[in-house]
Image (cartoon, rainbow, N blue to C red; front, side, top):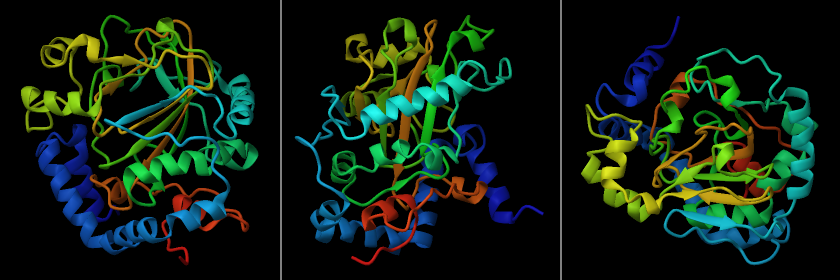
Length: 323
């Protein structure tokens, strides 16, 4: 029998928190999660404040100038972040096995998008974790979040090899689902790390985003996250509040990396991907989330090796490392 807490969480989360409105539901979730896990969150913030340099040094030398997330995002076009070459190579093996071949139910949710990564891939293809847990990447993520976050185990999935293709979609007449602009409500702050695995052009349905400041200015105009207001926004009302030239596109060569806070930057993607788009997407969240997903889902547990650094273990598992 489903626990009462899970049934209540499912009721509150239904249709993107529309029963009470996203803003009210998130407030309730934050209060609940702080009660349950506030001490763990404070521990991670303290570990960042007092021991981050030590943890990073133990995790491995960061390469080059660290990316700094400003106004909700940072873009790395240097192609020098550690592990990119290996990750692109191993991802191509996964794409060759599953890309455009995996069974995709027509007209399913996000018919134009699927995640072809599997939980066991992190053991078969070590570059998946080695890239995102490198000191170069974690320095950018942790400095922005001012804490030691976790690789999300629920929503959004912490690891996705995202394949977008118009060939999956038989209803191409109107944009829908994540093709429409929205802000993620799962956690605040949070960070996506998006690595382009192949070159992306306008014909690949690039990921699009608006800066945090421009997004914040649009929220009251749109009455966004209020009860009765849609979670996904049609273009007409969205562009009544946001200047079209404010929208940026992730149309870059493979190896480009975007760091972005999707809870503060309006974003969308996978529009008209006539050339399939492939990108690795990682989701970082604090221990105290702003949703109830952990009551509804069994969190994914990532593979931890005996020789992993304290920082790496903290990002992969919800436990205290000795710091």
